[in-house]
Amino acid sequence: MPKASRDIFVSNKLGLHARPAMQFVDLANGFSSDITVTKGGEEPGEADGKSVMQMIILAAVEGTPLRIDADGEDAQQAVDALADLFNSKFGEED
Image 1 (cartoon, rainbow, N blue to C red):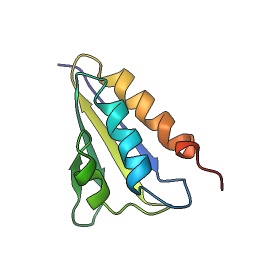
Image 2: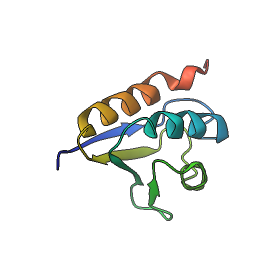
Image 3: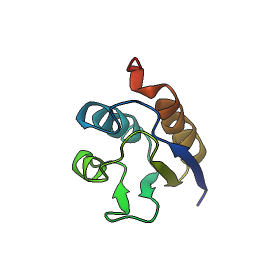
Image 4: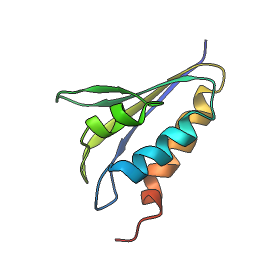
């Protein structure tokens, strides 16, 4: 089964709060791949990318390094789209 991953940083000023976490999960649920988000070196270190609660529990503030892993037929498309969402700062202004 295809796999893809990408390292990213949380670039929006308010971090991964409820609204961007929901945007991420909504987008992730549009893909058939399993999606995991890992916050390096800290607890909780891993979240199901399709669970809002788990994404919020990551408590990822601005500058936090994360890794997006996808496992499934559309893994690369999922990782690319989800990384683009982080790079767009979830539409938040600085």
